[in-house]
Image 1: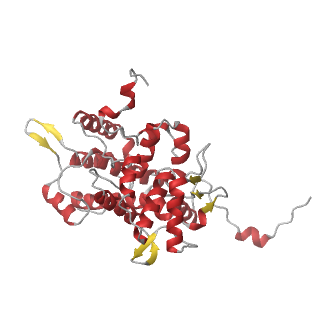
Image 2 (image 1 turned 135 degrees about the horizontal axis):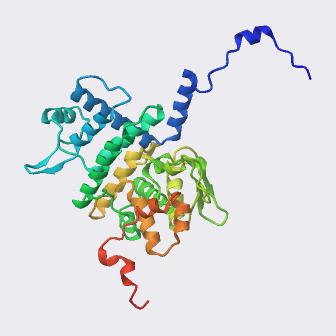
Image 3 (image 1 turned 45 degrees about the vertical axis):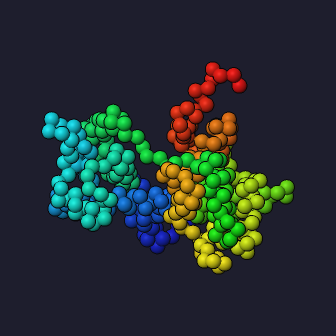
Amino acid sequence: MKIITSPTVDRLLTLPDPAKLSEEAAAAADQILAAARSANTMRSYRTALRYWAGWYQGRYGQPLRLPLPAATVVQFIVDHRERDTPEGVRWELPAALDQALVAARLKSRPGPWRLATLTHRVSVLSKVHQLQHLANPIDNVEVRQLLASARRTAHRRGERPHKKAAITRVELHALLATCGPDLAGLRDRALLCFGFASGGRRRSEVAAATLAHLRALPEGGFVYHLDQGKTLQDGPRTGGSPDKPLLGVAATALQAWLDAAKLTEGALFRRVWGSRVGPALSDRAIALIIRRRATLAGLEGDFGGHSLRSGFITEGARQGVALPALMAMTDHRSVASVIGYYQHGRVADNPAAQLLEEP
């Protein structure tokens, strides 16, 4: 076969350098990366980068420019982590800059950070360098050793990651008992049951739930097709399924809300004004509803959006549900991650402490 080429086309066609992205391709890559992340993740990235920019401007008197040298990251770490000295506990962030960052609402309160906050800020900076193919200062030996030392110090001081209180079966029933027969009560009952029973959904996943992904089962109950979520950003987990069953109490609560609100399309959980139904709830509104119901129930603890997730995993473990079955519902990819959500409550409540007792 003879291939005929056009001289005009040959002159106009310029092949790009395969080792270098064009501006259009780079912009497309950024769009793909942004679309693959949850709104909460993108919000946390923006918050972290705004803080880096504000801190850098105050520390060095010039705008933030990448890549950052390792020495700058070292300064950032010692500015925000306290250390023991012969003169007492110290950190290096100048008081005036500390107050300015708080006044600019880039920092919630003056003083050093907890390890989790520092680690998040440094991780975001590392990710930005990776995405822009820049030399990563976090890979520097001095930076890595300093972070490891900060982790060891935090452990010795008893500093542990803060977790939202788990809503297990007992707490969930207490919350449901505060939900009356009015429209808001029916919505909150359905919302709490949906978030717990479908695998401990995050508040962003509950807020994004739509009727288009809800399917009624012939034998009763529903199946919800979860098409977005933090653990689904890289596609479905091996061996898992995006279809989450809603049966029994959860299905009854959801049907009662759908009937009362007369919903046929759009968002599953919406704002309510008396007898009127409004637009979709935000993820922050989901967390506020959980906290408000916990207060009405008289529960003590720091409850929020992740309480349903922790509670689902904790309750499943207490009832002896196999870990693979739990992970199929939560979509966790690693055992270490799912175990991190388990909360055994009081020390004496740990079932592993009862192994010598007669069943």
